[in-house]
Image (cartoon, rainbow, N blue to C red):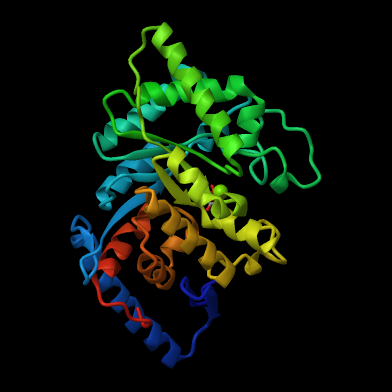
Length: 332
Ligand code: PEP
Ligand code: MG
């Protein structure tokens, strides 16, 4: 109590009772950081065009209505990943179609005609929820998670798909399926989407009839088969948190090995490169919404590989936008 400490959020260090030189050094760094931050915020709405003219779509990862509003203020050009899990974590019962619709619509209203990518439910694995009774599994990360769970429980999936489609009426809502691992799985998910549309038509409810549909590339099999999957969708979004975990056989939630789940591992970078090339061959765009997108050095590499959109937590958006426009320097 009363001891001066410095928290260096960049290196993850805590310096207790710093000596005068260290203190001065950090005060200088803090001032410089504050100056850069003010510039980032002031320029948050300027387009992210690199010095060689490549326009990057800078969108946000969000998980609530409040974050949607903050993201707009931070210059988000839309949402690259709406994690819908938050709606399912709130109580012991599943949210109804109407409850989901209200929230998705409120978020879509914030973004109006800007794109809003809604990811369908991604639970199981590390994300346990009280409202769905998940059987205990020995390897939950390799078990009934995300799209696998939704395909196994069509009533949960259908309810969510109808809510998203209704929220997309006259809005730019796109639908994204997580953890797709094969063409067959994707076809099943697309079949479910058609079923949800047919039900809404039968109920005469306004909804998006032809929303863009994409998949997350987070299973190595999907990355390897990107050229087969690309013609079936409108876009890809690379989920490097899981792509690294599954490519490198590292449980991202296991503290002792999590540091090995490095998305800059050459094997992961090679897969990312293949995915971008396969998508572009089929005139499809590719975004990336894993944590690595927020690492400036990684971002420089990813843009060099031709990525069309990057999706970050909203607080990082102004930083990344300014960096996209600047000459890249390892000293940023
Ligand atoms: C990912 O896997 O990279 C991703 C964005 O999804 P989540 O972190 O929600 O699994
Ligand atoms: Mg994931």
